[in-house]
Length: 151
Image 1 (cartoon, rainbow, N blue to C red):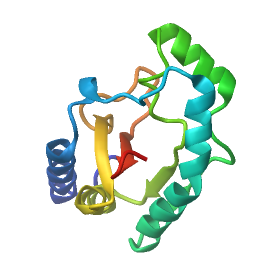
Image 2 (cartoon, rainbow, N blue to C red; image 1 turned 135 degrees about the vertical axis):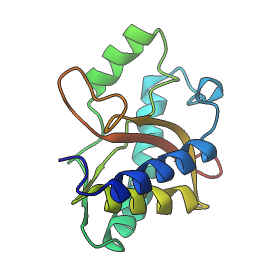
Image 3 (cartoon, helix red, strand yellow; image 1 turned 60 degrees about the horizontal axis):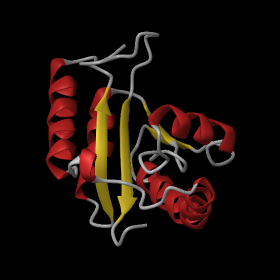
Image 4 (cartoon, rainbow, N blue to C red; image 1 turned 90 degrees about the vertical axis):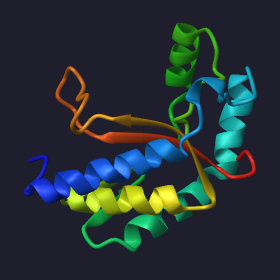
């Protein structure tokens, strides 16, 4: 179920557009390191702040639930991605989570709040609910971000 009502879908697409307007030019954004060890260490330093920020976001929205993984992205997967990309400087999802929502209107609210958060810089957005679901049928809206100040 993507949307119950056309209004929900319109609100979601408006929120996606708002996030896109706030996003940086992804091609120009890098992690600032070519070291997988430094990347993982930096992720470890920011994880608690990230978990608090995303949990707080979900807690303020009825119908949204924060779902963090138990740990950072596995180092073996980081190595695999770095090998395929030729660099680890474009790996942005070492610290990650899901915010699961009940409907598209709630997704729109979560996106709008994230776009309005002055502590977060949006690096990239991949909208895969409506325009580009994965070949396996997975639908989501994936956002890569960082805290202001380069964290």
